[in-house]
Image (cartoon, rainbow, N blue to C red; front, side):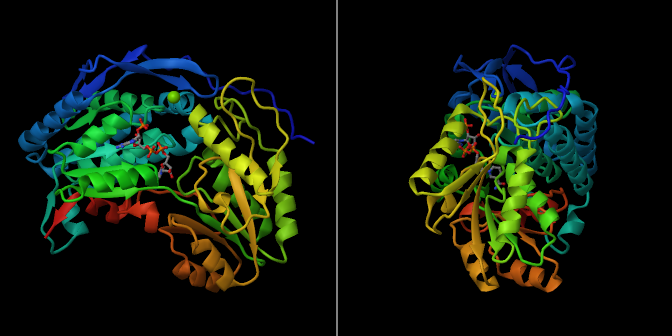
Length: 479
Ligand code: NAP
Ligand code: MG
């Protein structure tokens, strides 16, 4: 049986202008790339081309870094912190005014549902600018009795799962702490960062303080390897994080790396089961599972296993997979063909290993990249589906008897980004949160974000924190 049929409720795209071609935003101007090359960004929901975007090479990156250095030396490090705050506040307001446009462009370029881009990505991105505008002139109170200084030029490289939000996580704290920026969005999702450049331009921010260069991994590598970049802030895969760490070893560059995850959601036998099931669904199927801290492993305590799995399957039947711009849609498009191939590759491995699989029965659109929500069960702890990040709507289910057992199993991956605990007992929450090796642990909720709360990982999930007071430290020299 499938879920209910709903009449389509499409968000309008008529108020959105996407240019045919985007240049690089360097030193307050739109400039053609020295490479003379452009690449296409598509809508993964229907494979239509949205725009052509400049591919920055080393020369372009050098131009952007020089602009950022000049802006740092001559303007941004000299103006008062209260002045910096005004610009950041203005960027937040301008983004809020254009929030509908940002939400639609994000859904078009990334394939994420309009409900999420409208209710999560864009408001949180605005809030990051508002929050950091507040810090700019209060840094001395954040770190009392310490001498603090900005670092200089920050090179920032972001992934495709939360394109605008990741740009906000990077740019807002860098500006608040007095640094200038060269930012590269991911190749499949450059449009909202380019729209953000338009807003930054309209805000009157001095030229060169923020530069946006688009391109592939080679553009990111050119930023990482540029001699005059003082700090690298990277969010992306653990593989590329390791390359970056090697590249900057022995240099003076500071770095914060936010990498992959394989986070555990744990349901104890005393948990409020209906709420827990809803939280698990949100934890893994939110944003097509393209969430670094997705609750991609579910641990269910014996005694409630059958109930939880039955309720999960029941709830999955009512999830709607399809057009991201339809307000009814729960699960949108997978971000790219490459990512869909990776996810399907893991499902094949599961099949070979003899895992039990459940996919909710749903009609998928005929073009575009889609994957139905999937449960995989009966897996060995060593299975690649249990150990590796799939970055798609695939939930690996395991069971446990005792608390010690679940702590051991939950900690037994190379990652340590997030975890979730579902129980009625506060003492169990305290016990688990002190023993789980994860940067963020949610109790009786999942995937909740706030600019005031630091986010970041343990082990191969990276180091450094973003957001909150702790997030400011990564952009400051302290004595
Ligand atoms: P990715 O392949 O590591 O790419 C991230 C960014 O790095 C992209 O802009 C990419 O450019 C660029 N890049 C690629 N190769 C590079 C190199 N050699 N040097 C410098 N930059 C390079 O990751 P992704 O596939 O886009 O994103 C998914 C990953 O991000 C997942 O593992 C997820 O867990 C992680 N993630 C982590 C967090 C967190 O906060 N911990 C948040 C979100 C996502 P191209 O796009 O052109 O390849
Ligand atoms: Mg795209």
